[in-house]
Image (cartoon, rainbow, N blue to C red):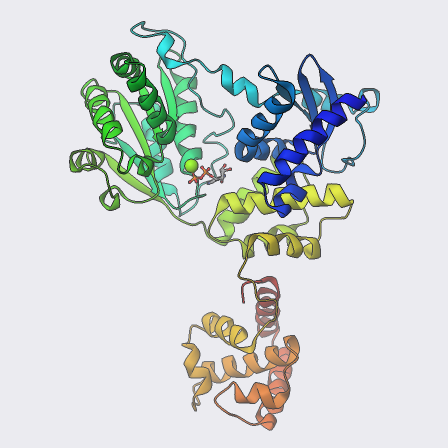
Length: 476
Ligand code: ADP
Ligand code: MG
């Protein structure tokens, strides 16, 4: 490693540090090592492919700015991806010792600036059958878009569209759902599928934000017609995050025109949105009514099994071995956002590479704390009551009331038993949280539960399941 490349990278880091949170800096930038500087190309080494993708997705702009500042306009950044998560990040890779099968992975991956080479749509107005880069990520495929109840309709509709673009009733296909639930992945999977099935079809993915910026440019350059002509050549147009068009009158007007042309000509339109079309605000009614012409399908938050399947598949693809309990722990605690789920995992791998610690639940807890802000570390009696009541399918208030109903009595006794075992509350305090019972009732309950466990294997399993669930959950 020459001194120069270290110096250049250090200067970049100074810029980066000012622009990201200390936690992000620690997670994403400290593990990076500069390895080479040649012809205004700086090669940096990152721990794994995930890491590289994360940087590309979240910090492209920042990296670009800092590199340009240091190396001028011709500055480029290349990535060197280390083999697996166990190689220490502090070591400069030695090509001779690299595992042969890892050679491919160890080649520098063209970096952020290649994205800049993407064709400017305006250079090819009016010419048909030109090669247009669809601007889709080749890794977003159907095969790695795990199916679950949460996405079945959208996924199937997407597949139908990919098999017959423009030829189904699903035109436009609107995929909507909260952030991080897979809209972009699914929309791009459709694009990839079309590209592989129909070589001659022109597919284009564009975010609504980029689309808007292109329109602003076109207006500035007096080239709106070229712009519209360009978009009319597309066979499958994927416009991502249309809520971004809200309030942008001129963009909506031009899009309205493009939409009509494409639709009339049997071209496929795929839109994504963070809410159902009817709830989009600041978007012209005539557009909203067109969005409703086809099918709107939502993506919901995945259940635990689907979350585990998604994360498990990602890890397997990366060749990373994560203990199952850690996987389960993470999926238990990150519920509403798949991107966050991946974020935790990547961060976990990065941390373990960095500090050379095994990936275990303790480390996972630390990492998750940085992602989930509302974590209360103590297990409370109330939380135990809620989980147990849920398990026995009884309203939690019933645990506090007088009753002889068998399942409520058992739920109450079991809650007391678990409260005794998992919290450091006194018998008296526990009794009080159950509608003011006294400590002898708690002792009696614990004994009753223990007796049942000793004689009933199924009950014993129930108790261990619940205990595990309580311990695993950080969100109490
Ligand atoms: P959105 O566009 O809705 O914000 P993304 O499409 O960017 O969400 O998805 C966030 C992350 O979650 C991506 O890395 C994506 O690959 C992953 N993801 C979402 N849904 C699935 C799924 N069903 N199977 C596998 N990965 C998924
Ligand atoms: Mg998206």
